[in-house]
Length: 252
Image: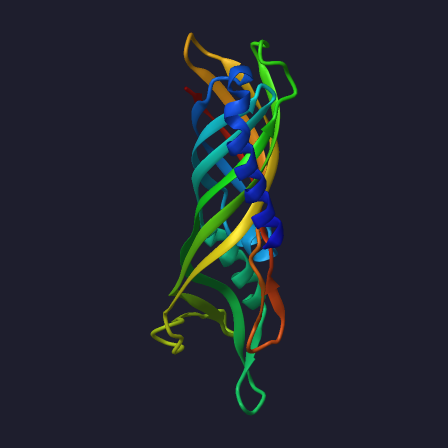
């Protein structure tokens, strides 16, 4: 927390000094960009969510020709990978042998599926610093950047049912619905969190006309979410959420 506060104090000092350097600065610019976001951690996020969508807009102030200060807002959204959940659910159950209370063979689970849906999203606001590796007069600009963000996180996951197929000794198949036949309850899980995060990466800006440039960048994002403990197994899960965003857009 102290690191984030210090970061924004530094940004404020840069703004207060910007007038003194105005005659040396590049022209301030507005940028919009979009692309893909790839989950990295924790494992539950990486394994059970698909590639996401990233949408962003920012205004960049130049206190000096080689330093930009972006102020941004963005949105990321990831949807649940139902196929991955199904694969794990099936692998855990298929091959399980069923016996009655007297030890007599009843059959074996030969197939299983689960209907699980959901999405996680983040609305973020923040500011950063963008040092340029190329001089202002270069037509193609290369830069690095780092930022701090405040993230409004929302998660919604739903278990809607599924089924299990049992094959007996005579190769007869019986399909049992998880909800109607086996008594499982449909469930909905929602969570809202507000967390700080940081990001860093690199990009390139190339001319595309007299007043428009194109920008492409890759960013490694970290949101400081916390570990949780399963109340039944005692196992820890979760932790810092990270993903890589690969985006492209337009500079005005």
